[in-house]
Length: 297
Image (cartoon, rainbow, N blue to C red; front, side, top):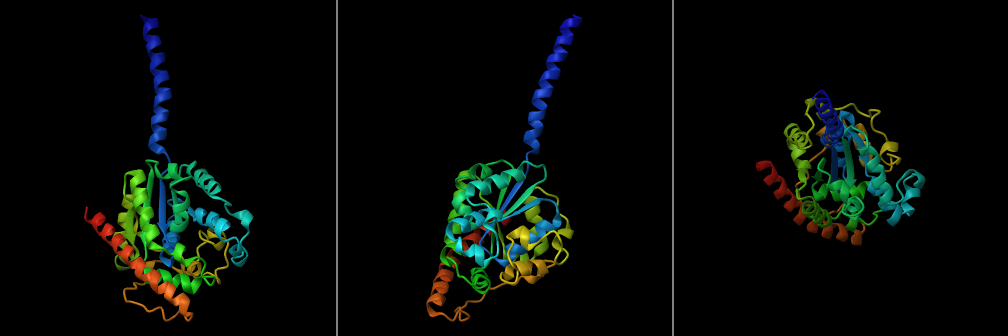
């Protein structure tokens, strides 16, 4: 009888030693938050908030590095960064993300839509489909986004692909289809009008306790640097400089008026921006409607 009970205890111990760690590992797998947007000042400031909050490891646009290595290598010298310091392809970008996810602290990744659409649904599909992954689309008004790109990107590189809201909305739908869950949509106008409630709902969505201290941070804090983002000269890319000098979301503005893009002197380029703006507005309104319905649920 003693030997029988002893054997049962040994079996129970073996079962607990082998099952409980697996269960715990499943429960504690690293939370992964992906924020996708077009290149904008609000997305940089949002990243600034996440870095300053220190609740997550942060990754800044690993796919963008791979995108430009493939599609715009001539820009690397213009932007003063070494190709050896960035992912040369999407496989390397995914490996970089996986290294962050091997740690226990939640990971927040800022990614741009034009790169995300090339790798997140392919090489990075397994990252999207993790139960612990939360995906957010941060949507800026097209007027602000396009004028920012024109003002701060002197090369005007592939603007029709990089600042394309139709492609961004297609990516949103594909992620919804692949994961079975629609990504959360956050309109930057909502942050500007009511930062507290909008950011509080965001933290609720990513399962991290919210604190009002997240809504402000120190200017040019050591937690953010040009090298950490892309190793780019901030004087050449003003959206980084805005993020460095910000201490809350008050630096952002709402652009609701129509524009003729008279700021753009080249006629052909101005027409390109005008056409892209009109097309982008169609999908911006679709994102607005999705955001409204999500808030009302």
